[in-house]
Amino acid sequence: MKKLGFGLMRLPLINTDDPKSIDQDQVNLMTDYFLERGFTYFDTAYPYHQGMSEIAARRALTELHPRDSFVLADKMPTWMVTGTEDYQRFFIEQLERCGVEYFDYYLLHTLGEQLYADSVKYGGFKFLKTLKDQGKIRHIGFSYHDRAELLDRILTEQPEVDFVQLQLNYIDWDNESIESRKCCEVAVKHRKPVIVMEPVKGGSLAQVPEEAERLLKEYAPQSSAASWAVRFAASPDNVLTVLSGMSSLEQMEDNAGYMDNFVPLNYEEEEIIGKVTDIINTGIAIPCTACKYCVDTCPQDISIPEYFSLYNNQHRFRLLPLHMNYYRNLTVKHGKASDCIGCRACESHCPQHIAIADKMKDVTAVFDRA
Ligand code: SF4
Ligand code: SF4
Image (cartoon, rainbow, N blue to C red):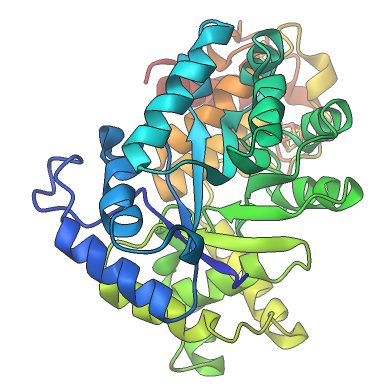
């Protein structure tokens, strides 16, 4: 399979204020072009475009192309499941919306600490396995937004899983709270292929600071900043495909151009990406180095470096729903930022001399009062 998938979550719209107003003619054109170029993977989900993404998939794919000419992935909305019977109800609705008899790839959507516990409680993994045995799902997996440690536990406890979908991009690769690299390594350890989401970090790596842009253009004048991000994400051997939420034919043509005969980043390109990462990271709001000297001192068990990392990410990229996901998962086991009592026990341990208690108020304002 080619290493580029069409993420059906940022489809072109007729009215930009209405996420349901998908420009179906444009989507059909993009879909035809994608298939003609030999790409086959399409990724939708129950909530995308407020339920209209799955229907757009039916109109662009199922109604116009033979079922075996494309690979369709869909996802169970785990946060809407309140009992075992919900799995069947949602799954049947999704088959109907997409107009298919089976899904090639099917995922429990957006697992973290809490949603994993719920999925085990309600029998989500068993449900997927049963459908796979019945031929209604070809490959079972889950998309994931939490720490590498938990991913290791899930893959140990659920060995029947065929693949995982991870957030992987060069800015999150060594990020303290998102742990893209470590998650990727866990997948390798369990021999699970990875489907990548957010390779361009919600589109934000398509426009990098001027200094970084200059470095990229000096090396490859014709390549877009987005192409560097997608190629970085596709480079690990265990990556099956990289999802790009394309919104126009122009974006698709750009992506298809360099992913047609994909070449992983070479050493020199990796070095450049390292420099670009450093440039982007210099604009950080809180200069926490994630040394963790402070964490054991906190009576509220606040996950200080992880919260600062998410705050920095949010400050830089303004992707609140994405970062809020990670924040909520962390607060399942740790105190929230708003639980800080201002004792400043942590501050004398901080080699960066960060006024942690004051900064925790900033974190609170973003993540606990959102
Ligand atoms: S000031 Fe806040 S973050 Fe620091 S130790 Fe006290 S409660 Fe924890
Ligand atoms: S001690 Fe300071 S630099 Fe180290 S993790 Fe804590 S806040 Fe960050």
